[in-house]
Amino acid sequence: MAFVITRPCCNDASCVSVCPVNCIHPTPEEPEFRTAEMLYIDPESCIDCGACVDACPVGAIFPDGELADEDEPYLRLNADYYLDHDGEAGEAPLRRAPKLPDGDVYIAVVGAGPAAFYAAEELVRFGSVQVDMYDRLPTPYGLVRAGVAPDHAATKAVERTFASTERKKNFQYRLDVTVGRDITLDELADRYHAVLHASGASTDKKLGIAGEDLPGSVAATEFVAWYNGHPDHADDVYDLSSERAVIVGNGNVALDVARILLTDPDELASTDIAQHALEALRTSSIREVVILGRRSIADGAYTNSEFLSTGLVDGVDVVIDDADLTVSPQIAAQLDDGTVDSTIGSKVRLAREYAANGTHSADRRVVFRYLTAPTEVLGDSAVTGVRIVRNSYDAQGRVCPTGETSEISTGLVIRSIGYRGQVVDGLPFDEETGTVPNHAGRVVNTEGEHLPGQYVAGWLKRGASGGIGTNRFCGQETASVIVEDIVGGAMPTPPLHRDDVVAMLASRGVLPIDGGGWSNIDKAERTASRAVGSVRRKIVTIAKLREAATGPIPG
Image (tube, rainbow, N blue to C red; front, side, top):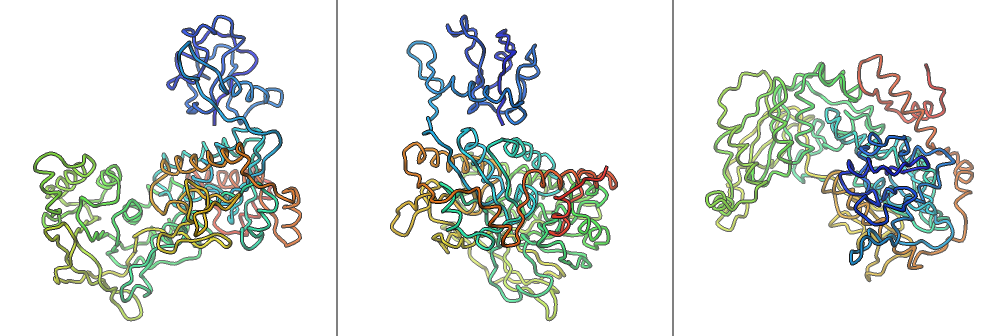
């Protein structure tokens, strides 16, 4: 979202002085300020902080998604100022935004997660670009809604940025539509100048060990979806009667799962956790979660902030044995001479602090075990334990099994070793990386040639790594190459018009949910949350989501 200066602008520059990114011009220091009719906000640089709104003495500044009809032209007026506008003599232009050819351009975005939205945010800055966002679920926001842990409300606040994009007049939802089933890629290509695929990486990676498919051995992707109320997993049932759970993996998702399993359910009740999950956790017997990492603490894939927050969970001890703090010879040398990467150094120091804390009085605990890998999930008809092997480093810093094995008793094993993309019908796919081959977002064939009108963003573009911030850069990069292709005339002209899509889907018994329908769902969930004292009570079945989308909303 960007802010826009409108008609009442008084030119007193109060907004200029509070802008943290210098995106309001001309400033009093610039010669043009003396004769300027009004001031202008650069939509490309605005960071949506709102400081200028509070500073404006005449109420002339509004979010671009909340402009009255008569003020819509001011969005273009603000942007036009920066097209080729020079600063003072000898300075580079403030910004050189591309000038798009005349006529509307239609873009279909497949997926409604962070990468999709960050790309859409860039595209809808151009009034002639019309973005239709498709998703197979009746709800948007992807893993922000169904993947971010319920107790990470601050992270979920990024939804406000997405909401500002969805309010744009050149943006519309077509939710509850499965591309590839309800409408084919060829049908989209016939109606849109470009199709941007940003459907994420929705499947889990396997451990490849015996017993992995036993009841009680589950994927973190599914478990996370279950407690976040994803409709695909609302009916899942997990046996939480064991006193110990084992998580295989050393990323942020592993810590999220451990934290949810051990946090007092009364604390989770105020979050947007799915009610079925909250009820199951209230009767859970799990008091210990063991997290296994095949390499050392220095190789932990979780962030230091997540590692630190694990130790801040009320009533939960963090347990690390000194024997598990071994690192590779190379890292050990870097720690000794002070040349170690600061992120790794902080992680090792924090782990040592946890290990040095001999006071473990809480009735719940999370145990970190490094240089430990599972070799078999044990049990006949259900999981009863996991066999593990101790690893060590050789002189070259490679991880090698030692042959020293042991067993951990448990009734629940959760693998958390990453997500993987799925094949998109009609596009090339790299099975090894789980991605669609591309150059900076342009989909390419086996010869490296760009497939006209086909683009990719997010995990499907680069693999399942990085968080929301990485997806911002990734989505923006793809949006920029789409704009380049529009300007350069490399965008194919569709033979048909996208205006017939809704009627075509209706003839197939598919009724897309638009922005109004999503607004109804959002209001219904927030209304229901008041009865249970949470921020949101998610609707977790497709049928009920569709019902809520049609309204009316109860008062």
